[in-house]
Length: 102
Image (tube, rainbow, N blue to C red):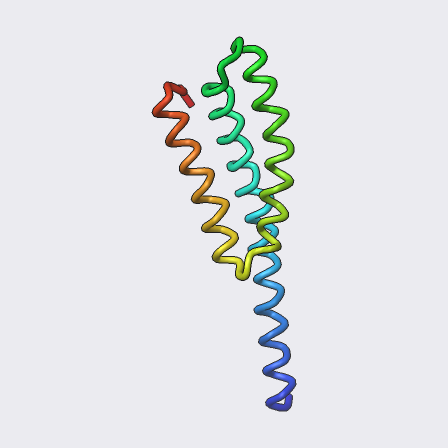
């Protein structure tokens, strides 16, 4: 194998690992992000609990799509993970502070 072919194979492997990492960030991180946002909205919205829960769940669906788009729009896979996981953790901590049991 020539040196150029080896470099091409290595760059292709790095590219594929980046796509895999972004896909996992979109799937797993997006789920955590949407769940945290739903929990926070259900606790923070000033409406009856059933309506706040439904509103939080419906907003979570849209936020899951936003997180997936962010995973592929970020400059790197590490930034995608950091952005999604950081936002999910912040919302989860605020929801815990507001009195969520989860």
